[in-house]
Image (cartoon, rainbow, N blue to C red; front, side, top):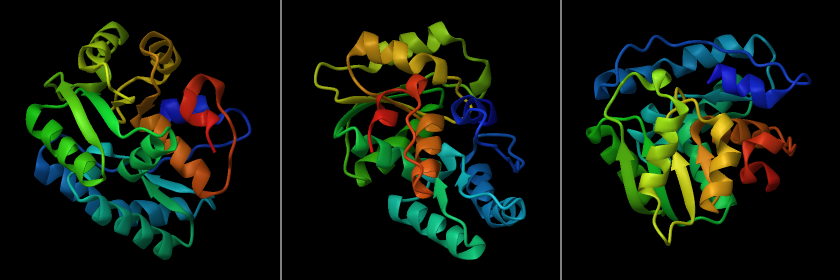
Length: 216
């Protein structure tokens, strides 16, 4: 996430990160991660940042959309800094590109993809197709494999493609996939950056970050 945030930020914006220990994609581990967000946000607030993103997509998807939004509100109240979550930012991004029928690609195992689907359906989307790679080695997946998975889940009536996971290297593929598929492409890191910037009323466009950053 930090690497792709830095690529999107450009020289005028600094990115600060506070890591939370995370060793496996079990439900217990991912839910525990969310409990550590208040302490991490507090430490980041000392850097006088202008926005904070709780940047684990999967941990957000294990909650309901309302619970996820509630956590963002609690972090905002605690730090007095606009706070967003990756999952809620993804919902906002999909709505910003006027998508309701979506396809989903991820590196996740089947149980986690099912939770992603449930969350997105609760948020009002129709998930036409979802597929994962069944791995926890998210950061090691090559671009050709990610592209092939993206094409696999597309359907004729798909209105946007969502590629999940903040440890999935996808930023460099967004424009290429949008051109190939003819649909907006939303990724975890791209949507998280968009959500964080919009929370501080920063409406900048980022040319290499897809159609999302051409919206207001």
